[in-house]
Length: 78
Image (cartoon, rainbow, N blue to C red; front, side, top):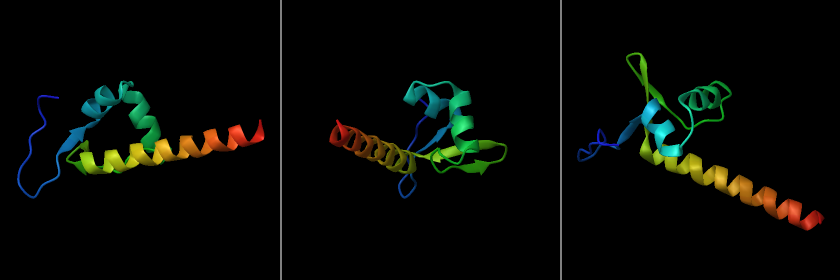
């Protein structure tokens, strides 16, 4: 992600393509998650979506916590 620049007071942002590459998923997956309202918070700049790195980190942590909770629930049943 060579295009990631930081400026004092501003959160770094990712494009949809950069986010998909970072997560190792197709761009369509990001579009699908957003459409299903299950993706990270984003905002539009012109026609393009941008995602704050801090929002993406919180989203990933929430998914990890949800998966961890599901693992515990499955383990409790077996």
